[in-house]
Length: 126
Image (cartoon, rainbow, N blue to C red; front, side):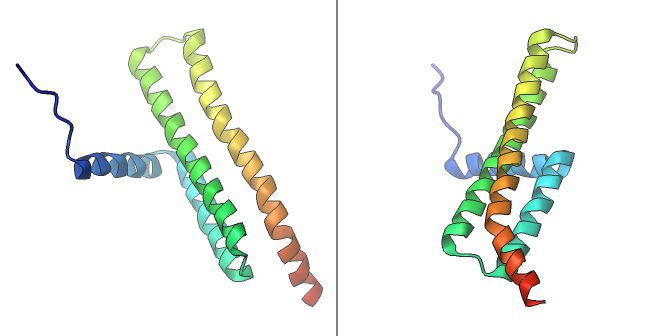
């Protein structure tokens, strides 16, 4: 009788990091999200945003990046299951992409709420 043994924890982390790297290296939209993360991080550093604002930004970074990874996984599974154009496959892909878009739009709105006062203050000093 064969025992069901789980992989060691370090291997599980390795697979997860491999998935993140695959998403970053192969997905155009993930690269765009990473560029946005870098820009917001630079702006946050420049404007010395508060700890609470950093926490909000970090949560939004995680939300959008995680949803993009899930979207990539959904697309891969749908493509694995069928090469035909099927209505349910379209629903799966479109709703996963919609989740990323929705989170990204809300993140931009929240980013404006956080950073516009800092930008206005900067322009008033000039």
